[in-house]
Amino acid sequence: MGERLALKTEPFAAEREWTVEGVPVLSALAQVPEPEGKDRTARRIKRFYRLQCRAFLRYCEKCLLPQAAAEYRAALEASRPLPAFRAELSYRVTYNEGGLWSVCTQTRETLGPGPALVTRRGDTWDLAAGYPVPLKDFFPAGAAWKKRILRHAEEEIRRRERAGAGRWREDWRRQLRRRFNPQNFYLTAEGLACFWPMYAIAPASEGVPVFLLPYGEGVSPERKAGQGS
Image (cartoon, rainbow, N blue to C red; front, side, top):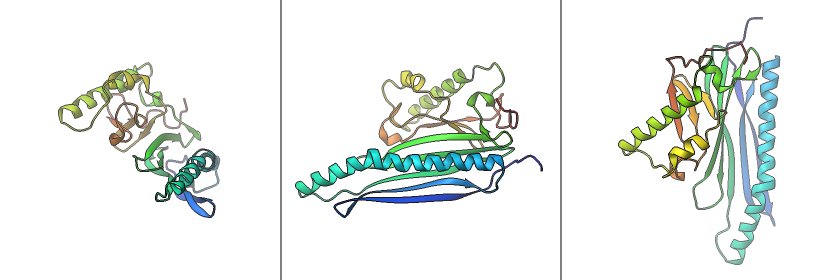
């Protein structure tokens, strides 16, 4: 068999609803990628995202349900409209060629009148090896890749500030470095997307800040495809 260059997937979905005294107070919908095929890589990726799906539903039951139940009882006592909390896990395949498969998964928790809490993660898989690829592998050996990413993000924030686009925390420069996580990235056709958690460097109105580092000058989506770390 030839080397796998792309991965075909279909969505796998699971839905749950929890009630208090027969009244629905929390619903959850999870959708994760389900690879086609039965080779080692497909099985490993399938198992990984099925586990992520189960972990999300357990989190909803153990952490969100008590909040929803408490809010339901408080609303009942105060004769307020009964709450209906909702949590969602979704995904988007952002890159799928050259032996690399990149996916962005995201959870959204709507727990009241305030902004929804959004949490994102990115995974980039080497389809030949069957394992995730670390961020450093997309830069030349010995490159100061972290410094380059942070410098690019800082320049982009300054550019957006000059254009009047976006709002940022007063201490965003310090938090940009403090909250940097090398696992928070995914590939796209245009470049390498690095992101920061919601609230880390900007208010809720900005959601999850993402900065795209274009390919070129040593940054490549093909640098170590199939070679491992």
